[in-house]
Length: 441
Ligand code: GLU
Image 1: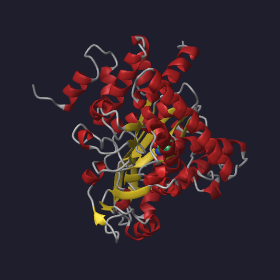
Image 2 (image 1 turned 180 degrees about the vertical axis):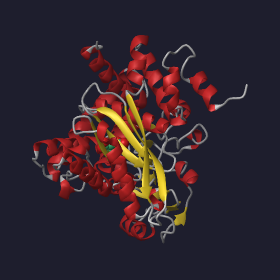
Image 3 (image 1 turned 120 degrees about the vertical axis):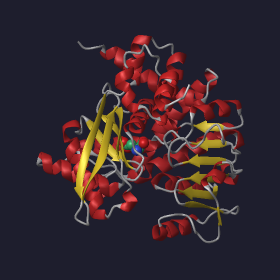
């Protein structure tokens, strides 16, 4: 039988009798299948009744919008934008907006699911969401980027709001994009509404410590993990895949704990130095060259080489499905800190589960610092009362500490992987909330 993506989808994910299948086929994508596979494992473990499964698993709402904009050369181009709101049970939906050429509705749906479990695991009063525009931000001028952003926000106005759905930066987006979104929404409402997005510039109601939050959280959790497995962090080495907002801050944060960063890659290349990379020099190089590639006093390294490099801490901080069945047997680290969303496939998980020498900090825990401080930003905006950075960082670490302790203790008690433990805690909380609210009408 020829396996098309459609047959694969039916074979591996949704039984032919599943009444949800025709509607949910719009999400078919390897990343969505992966998120569903992870969910099914947890649902089986929790012995979740069939009647609850589809209700908790599938996204509540999905929007696709056409975004026509004027290009600088006078032509018109239509981009496609998406937003998926996974569940509305615990409050507004929350999650980033990514600009990337390969964005699809299925990928966005998977990322929205993961946001749900992440928010529930850390006790935030949100459902998960994610958005995307299929475009290459590196190939758009700043004015074109602004037009895409404003048009996307405009098209999303019926579906967003501070109590409905709150966006934030993700891959390919940043504070400036959040500022344009906030402005577009505010002009529509006729008053300034900072709480419509998080990850804004501090000058517009953003939170101190939001930009650094994800990477800082990665550093904090890696430090905790080294305690757990008895590794001396001050003698540890790390390799980092991705040097955007998350990867670069994670590198600096780990360096502050005494970790030597020996390799970094990005979409254009990579650099390796067994004596440790000069991170300040690397930052400067990236500011001028838009890539780590070509940085002096380092040898070139590819992404594939970085993932299997001998080191203590491997930090995938780029995109999904990087650690696969192919490279999982060859990975040579003690800790995998998943700063990206979905970097490890379920097939790789099966292999890594057998390799008890590797400790995984799963994505929904490892990169949760970002959305936790987004929550702080939203709270500060709603109250128009702003906190100092020490207060933000202190509150962030407390939340991460609680989540980390709960995940480690469940993983040990039930002898399950850290991923299964983290997802179980998140999914169970959503299940409980849905049970308590009941089904209307
Ligand atoms: N995009 C980030 C994530 O994947 C942050 C989301 C947010 O702050 O709402 O967790």
